[in-house]
Image: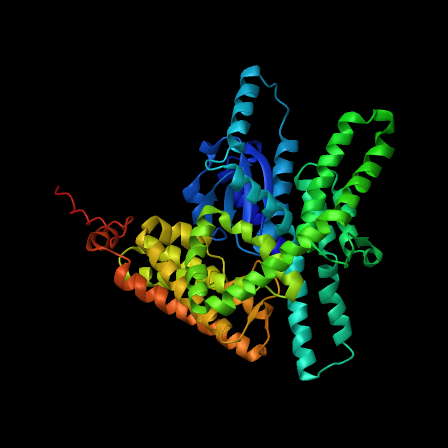
Length: 489
């Protein structure tokens, strides 16, 4: 049973991260189980990496176990249940002041990120707002692609309107979800954030005139919803400080929606609309004018952005582009970085035939790499080796240049959702030149990324000294002991 498998995975992970009493927090994103730890020293990294379901581990502000898309969403609830069972089943023990102090110190350290700059913390907050929306974006994006195929082929005309409603319903209300998640992330009441953001998509907003301009439903999109919800949080917190407790339940939500709503209608919608239009115009101009060069830069720099966590800044941009044109033109180009990474890993595999440990890691991580999950290859192979990480970026740049060139030639296309990459992006592709041309160009870009990443790594990814040092098995199998001669009597 799949549930048994997921529970077995969770049960295997739990003791290796110090047991239920060492867990401060549990969350997950698209590919990673994110755990807040009380005592980092209790974690057995090597044993975790050796688990069949674990694709890699990453340490940042939380301890992150890479399980892959789909799997992580199924394992996380089982892991949470096991932690809760472990805590509730433990006999209550008196806690000393020293133990409480030690736990407090551990919690404080667990909350510290080694590179927690204000900018990176802000990006993580942005990611926390948009990442929960990705499953719906993927599902609706695939349905939109299927609907496009049926429309172009003239098949099942009675089903097409139903599929169009399924694909477009979520996107028509995405601002509400963004507002809800934003308020939740910034410490406000989530439903008030959603209520203020709902003003943006309400059809009746078309009857409102602001500064002589007629507003349009959806104007400002997710950026407007983000700004409106942040403002609502600040208004709500101000009200909580100054409104008497007896009147709080009536006055605070009313003032929050009223003040934030007026600011949204008579300011934020216009400003966010202009910003959204500028983002869309710039992205399409960049590829139409920059072409191969723009693709080269974007594809070549994406792996370093992922390594530094700065790729999270692109999530609102992708979402804005999907809102405007139905797809983001940037994602297929950025996905070429993963192709360069796969090609580099294959080259490492063939250049180090005697390093059984590294070759085993590559064999286990490559399937996920082909599907766009690059962390196991980044953190387990190319980044620790150094030069192969650079040559992987070269492969990504070449693939990005290939796709960018065709954008410049007029074959523009993108992804109808964010999250997937690699081969998993095929069902989400859409463009202006037909489905077959779009698939062919994207497949060609992947092929170029694989090939250039492989060749660059094979010929330039190692120095002679690196080959000498690495082309050995760090855990060789010991030779069998020679049979003892029978004792003479």
